[in-house]
Image (cartoon, rainbow, N blue to C red):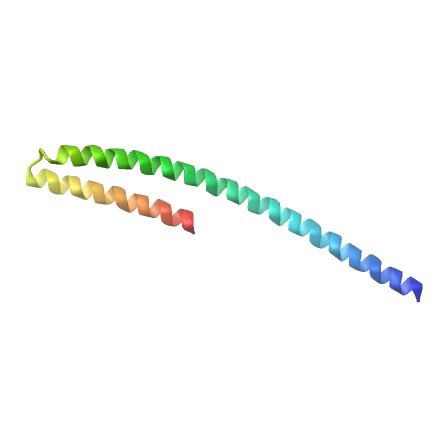
Length: 93
């Protein structure tokens, strides 16, 4: 009877150790993914800041533009904003 209990405990311990190793690997993978996402977020924030600076500069310069130039400029700004939204949505995914 004791041998059966001991064997049962050993089996359970083996299963627990196997599960622990699986969870450790998964944890390492998730940590790596978090690091990659944090890096991507930093890059996206830098790009957003750069685009915001361009946007501000364009907004200042737009005051002295013709209506056609203003329309073209607005199209460029819209394209930048779409790119920013894409970056943010990729980070949220």
